[in-house]
Length: 127
Image 1 (cartoon, rainbow, N blue to C red):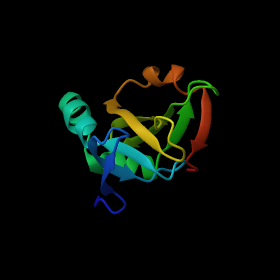
Image 2 (spheres, rainbow, N blue to C red):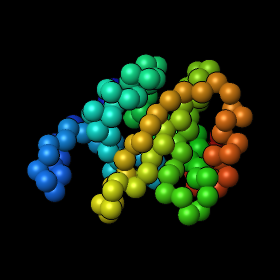
Image 3 (cartoon, helix red, strand yellow):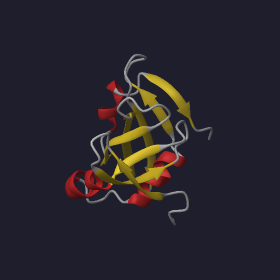
Image 4 (cartoon, rainbow, N blue to C red):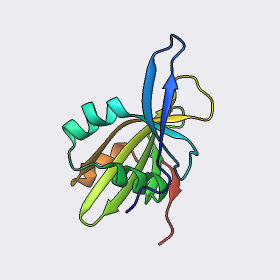
């Protein structure tokens, strides 16, 4: 899958710190930010099976988007690709309206893990 909607951007903090990011579009959220440092130092380092292409596919065309509770800010984007279940945690972006950020992304093969996460369904793909 080609990265059609993935954009590379540079953002600056209030103190002027330069942050390189990737910007995705999601099923429920239009602007989802992933800091490059977060991707390379955390996601790719700990979960080498996760690529930018997989993240983009899961966000744009998930099987489900759930929340653990109505008050929690995290959304769990999920998609099965071949025999692997991919899971991306998306949360509010530090008090910036209309932006969300990716906390982590990983794959799982035991769906029991999702039972406590899949309490409130925000989106389910029609089969």
